Structures are given as C-alpha cells and as structure tokens.
Image 1 (cartoon, rainbow, N blue to C red):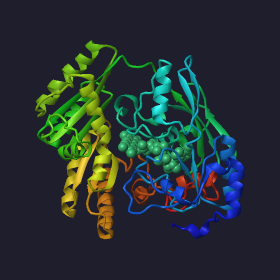
Image 2: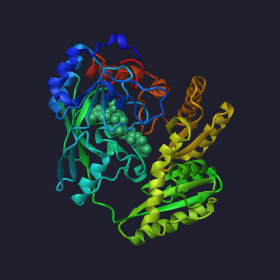
Image 3: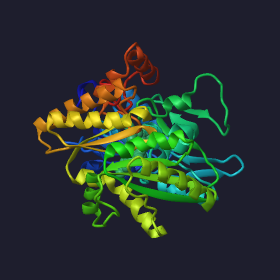
Image 4: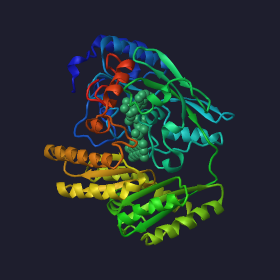
Length: 468
Ligand SMILES: Cc1cc2nc3c(=O)[nH]c(=O)nc-3n(C[C@H](O)[C@H](O)[C@H](O)COP(=O)(O)OP(=O)(O)OC[C@H]3O[C@@H](n4cnc5c(N)ncnc54)[C@H](O)[C@@H]3O)c2cc1C
C-alpha cells in the first residue's frame, strides 16, 4: 500500500465507533471487502480497504469524516464503482465510504426544471424518475450503474456530449461534506451565478480528493421528440474520422458521434454472441440524432449521408426497427467489457482538438507498432475524446512497457493541444502524467487548493497527485 505508514490504522475501536455512527450492519469487514477493492479499470492487483461504511445521511457522512480526520485515516468515497481510473480504489487502505444507501430522489421540480438527488442515486434511477415527470436528463456517460455522485466527481462525459456537453454543464449546485465534517451547500436552483468563487465547479471533477458530495442539483430539459441512429461503415479509420469535422462545419449538431475500429466490432460479437450489421468493414461512425419530429431527423440524416459518402463511406445504415436500433446501442455499450475480456491492459482517455483526431489516432497506432503492442481506437469523435485500448499479456514486463507507451501517447495528445483525460479522471492510473499539463505553477496551485480543503490529506490520497 502506498505511503500507508503516514496514516492512522482502522483499529477495533475505530470499527466500533464507525458502527455507532452508521449501524453495525452498514460496516463491512472481512470477506465483504473484496467487492470494494477495484473499480472497472483493468488492474493487475486489487487494493483492499480496511473497512467499508455505508452512511445514509449527510450528518452520518460528517461524523465518519470527523473521526477519520482526527485519526488521520484515509477515506475513499465510492459511488457505483464503475470508474476507469481506479479513483474509488483504496490504494492507501483506510475507509471506503460508500454512498450506496444515499439513493433518494429528493425532488423533481417541474417549475424550475431541477432534480435534487442524493449522490448515490444511479444514472438508471435518475433517467426513470425524470421520465416519469415528463422531463429529461440528456447526458449518458456510458454506464447506467454509475452513481450521480461518481459522475460529478469525475465530470463524466459520454456519448451525448457533442450536443449537451458534460456533467459540469448540468450541475446547478451541490451539498458536500468537508473532511472537518462541515456541510456546505453550493449553487442553487438558478441558472446564473456570478457570486464569488464557483465551488460547485471546483468540486466537479475533484475525484473525492476535496470533499464527499452528498446531494446534487441537476438541470433538466424537456424530452426530445425522436432519436435516430446512423451506422456508417468505411474502408479506413482515417476516412471515418475525417468525416467528422466536415459534418460539424456544416452546422449539423448530432447528439453524439462515435467512431470505432473493426477489431472492436468483432470482439463485441464474440462477447455478446450477436452479429453486428456490416461487421467486416475497417471502421465505423455511429451517429446519434435527435429532433422534434421525423422531418427534422430526415433533414439531418439527409445532410450527413452525402458528406460521409463523399469521404469514403461505403453505406449509410439506418436500423429498420426499434429492435435493430436497440441491438446496435446495446452493442456500443458492451465495447468496454468486450475489450477487457479480450486482454486489454490499459485504456487511454486523451482528448484533442477535434480537427486533430485522425492525426492523433494515426500517431498512437504508430507508437503502438514501435512497441510491438496492439492499440485499438474507439471513442467520441464528435468531441475529440479518443479512447485507446492497449492490448497484451498481463506480465510485469508488459505492464511497464504499456505505462511507457501510454506516457508517449499522452505526450503526443498534449503536444497537439489536448489533455490527458477527457472524462474518466486521473485516479491513480493516470496521475503520473499530470505533470505534462500542470506546469507553470499549476501543480503547486492545485496542491494548495487540496491543502486548503484537506490539510491532513485524508481525502482519497494517492489520487490525482502522488501524495495525499
Ligand atoms: C462500460 C463502461 C462504460 C463507460 N463509459 C463512460 C463514458 O462514456 N463516459 C464517461 O465519462 N465515463 C464512462 N465510464 C466510466 C464511469 O462510469 C464514470 O467514470 C462514472 O462517472 C463513475 O461513476 P461511479 O459512481 O461508478 O464512480 P466510482 O467509480 O465509484 O468513483 C469514481 C470517482 O469518484 C469519486 N466519488 C464517487 N462518489 C463520490 C462522492 N459522492 N463524493 C466525492 N467523490 C466521489 C471516487 O472517489 C472516485 O475518485 C464507463 C464505465 C464503464 C464500466
């Protein structure tokens, strides 16, 4: 465990005190700890927490944090555990603070288009609750079993970011508990805010290193009338990706534009046992369209099709039924698991200016070839967020080479005007690359912010930065 010696231990006495706060049955020790020792990133080894606690109120979270702060015990907040950077993994041991019991939808305010939810509400639960009120939360960061608190803490993005942006564009306010046990409220049910520092936006993306988010105020919108999907095969990845700036330059705004290489299509077919249409072409775009009615969808599809065909597309496939559409969407959602099952060792999350995606992907493939390591590209082409699955055998030697390779890929992304994480956060997996984008005093400034919130370094130590 990293730097564990500077931290206090979870003794029998501490466990008794934690049980006094959250109740005996909401304290996990022994065999139950394994479930909380990893998230969804490929990891060579798990990190067991010393104890897991499941508070069900902000005041209980505050009591846990006060105790941990007094005893200098690390606290790792955890939502759905679907993160891809090891953010919820307790690399320094200590307490995992799971928000899973704080899963109440507190209010759907139709007049103000605001949902107030506890941080442990899952995305799937939020979608259902707002739909029941005739409203819509348009973001979809890929995994519906993620919790809203986790989405906030990672500033999750996903497949609808081209039109709607990312989590920070839909959070109006937060309730958060500081390591001292103080409970703060930020923002509110209003659209504009120029009142001093914006603590809401500072906490978004802070990966549990500053405070525990306990409540979230989310902006809602009216639901779209219709959604359509285009699946467009190409003979080269270059042609597929190069079509994207052309589409956007014409002023067409799809909800999302995803790209993928053939290898992923085949791995997903093997993983699900279901065939994907047109599966033998080299590369694909999957484009999500929304509109109030069929005419609007047809107009967008009618403009996108010719652009892609003139850029080398072989066909423009529109699923003929709702079922065919659902099958394609489900296949897209399985990509990550299919890659993991096929031997993925790491998953890059670099974001570059949209105009440079094709160049970035080609450079990454070239670096992969230099290392003799397979690099498979998939990602959110419409917003420049490129995921690269790095494949191989999980030996110690290979892990070292993968880390070096990923460092070079990140460096190229940064040199092209991008950054090292577009949506997954740094957790412990990508923290070693932060220096590439945090020069000129930014690293020190961020560490002073960390110090101001968390002087004892108990909040999710070993994430984002190397120390607590
Ligand atoms: C198949 C698959 C597809 C995915 N697709 C996408 C995608 O398209 N876009 C995308 O952005 N992500 C994607 N992800 C990643 C993941 O779903 C997101 O990172 C998500 O936001 C994590 O939420 P979680 O609740 O699971 O968080 P966790 O994994 O539990 O935690 C993530 C981080 O947030 C912190 N945290 C959690 N809750 C709190 C809280 N209440 N207060 C303070 N800190 C907290 C943790 O300490 C940790 O640092 C995908 C994951 C999978 C498995």
